[in-house]
Image (cartoon, rainbow, N blue to C red; front, side, top):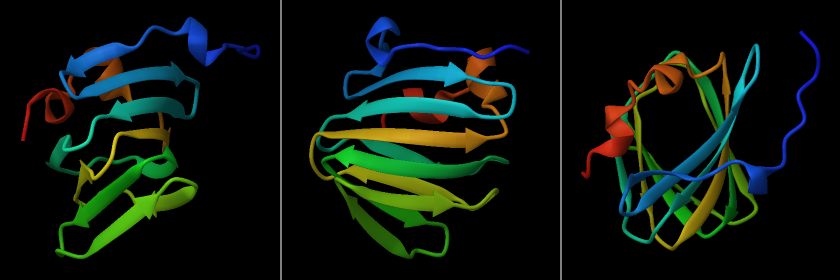
Length: 120
């Protein structure tokens, strides 16, 4: 497979709900996505096989884990979530998050991402 070069501004935002938008780039071994979360947006508790690294570019996001531990990540912060660890999120401010997943998010490609589309 050859290389792929894209510019974020050339990828349209996908509206998942009134308070969550996403755009993504899919590679052979990973997915990189931008998520725009409005203040108060919540992502339901879920888990997946993917290791997830979330970089909060701007704003503030609270992550809640299946063991009830919480971590607030502010703009400039990064959190790494291991495979299969249940987690939820809440935007405490309007936020932009860059998520990197390995392996690629085949569920997103197939449209099997209802945990992101349904309001909490």
